[in-house]
Length: 69
Image: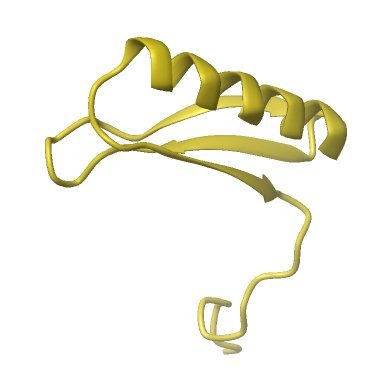
């Protein structure tokens, strides 16, 4: 299973949707796909997009972690 998620944050101003680009085993693979997606977006798509690399194994922020019973 991959560890790094590449996520496309769509444009809130024009309504372009957000989407998962892919899940990758290494951070270098994810960064390469992020750069390629940014290049494709600037050539082909409308709106302003932001591409993020997210570590799926990163600890959950304490304010979002489930409360202990």
